[in-house]
Image 1 (cartoon, rainbow, N blue to C red):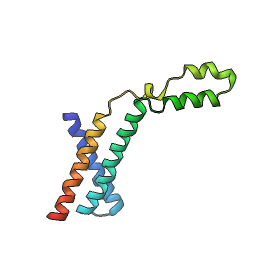
Image 2: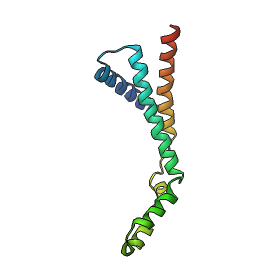
Image 3: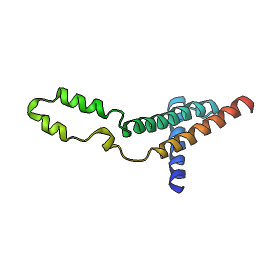
Image 4: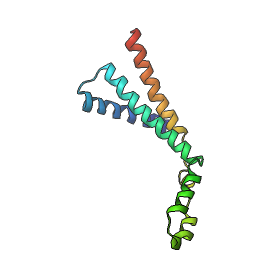
Length: 115
């Protein structure tokens, strides 16, 4: 839990730094925009890792290796690992961190419209 809180604080610092870098001011709308981009990027990364780690691209990768590898290297290409074997770490922290950032964005959006 402590590790997740540290990552959340680091993400909020990145959001503030990007706000100052891109928008040159700190306002609620710039926070909403930047937290949408950062949270969306983290959730998208988690989704991509989830898709690749479940073996969605394994057949495609093996087929492309067979087609584009010269005959003298076919044996080496057959021994290469599939992409799903390379990405075997948990994706839940990506979804939790991205979801927390997007929740902060929705809270900011609620304050913007109803506050």
